Image 1: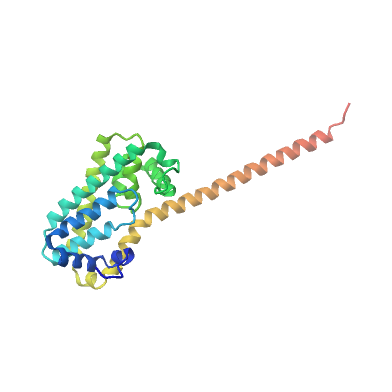
Image 2 (image 1 turned 180 degrees about the horizontal axis):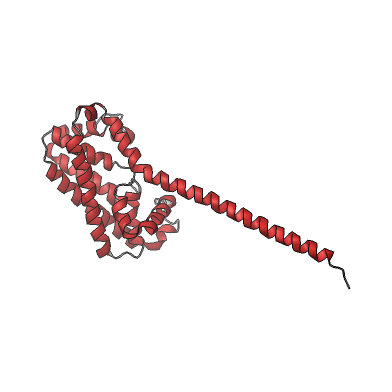
Length: 242
């Protein structure tokens, strides 16, 4: 790894860094991918690690370096399932106290957003969340904090992990080494990141718009109540006293 290594550099140039890891560690490269995906999905304080872009780059590199795409898929599928399972049980252990602000390492804004995402989509949120950074890390944790049984969670967990890994690793293996993609890999990774976080911004925009509407409705209610109060007061003063 270069001395100036940083997370943003790793994400935007993930193909170069993965190739370097492969050259340096050989077959242990499979386990490095396993650990990254496990930590990104299983440790609730690590939502910033690469996910979708890592899977796409791993698929592309597998074709380029003649690695086993099925093996990468199987290992990352297991890592994703185990990661969400650990995250679920951490949430189960901590319980509702997670939302009390007691745990400083848990960002309350992320928890609340994930909870709303959960309330909107139900159990399917576990599947949808696989494709949404940050929410992907917090969804299993919130499921554990809530009332979802582990059996029901496990079904969505397995199905979501399977679709997520097959789609992104498969896309990388199929398209990652096309000349246009190879020549613009950093831009492609940036597009993947933007598309992945787009649902977060859409939900934020909807919530902001709804908050503005609610504020306007509240202002109108207050104005109506003030007008009624003023009308009542005027009528009272105009009534002759006996």
